[in-house]
Image 1 (cartoon, rainbow, N blue to C red):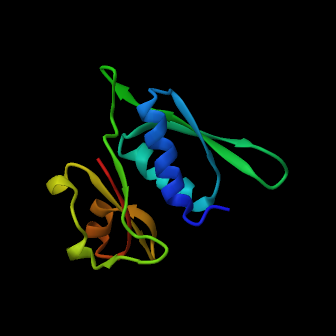
Image 2 (cartoon, helix red, strand yellow):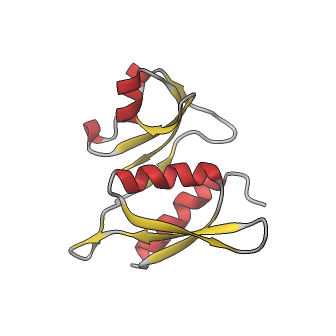
Image 3 (cartoon, helix red, strand yellow):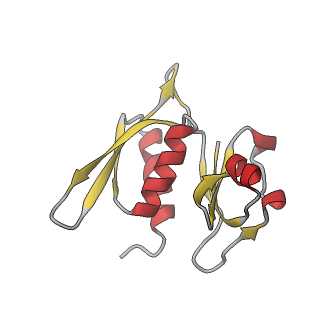
Length: 131
């Protein structure tokens, strides 16, 4: 059993990037789907698809993005952990390298990037950083 599935997802992506893999399989959930939607929208991954495992389980196959042989994702950092949740108001959401990367935030309006959280003036739990 995995105690922190989002940290597991980040670790799988980082390990696949280290090995220069084109794709990585991640066990599916709706929360992970929303994070993958943000990564795709912001240009950190090419795409992902859903593959059913059996009647009630599914996996994501994530297509990683490379530019000139180097991964577009330098690092994925999990901030809020099961033992210590980190919350921030919209004007106090931490920026990654002064806005070069993105901060993923879970808000009352769903899982969104820090840019959208600032536009909609909504804060929430800081899930992690991507740069």
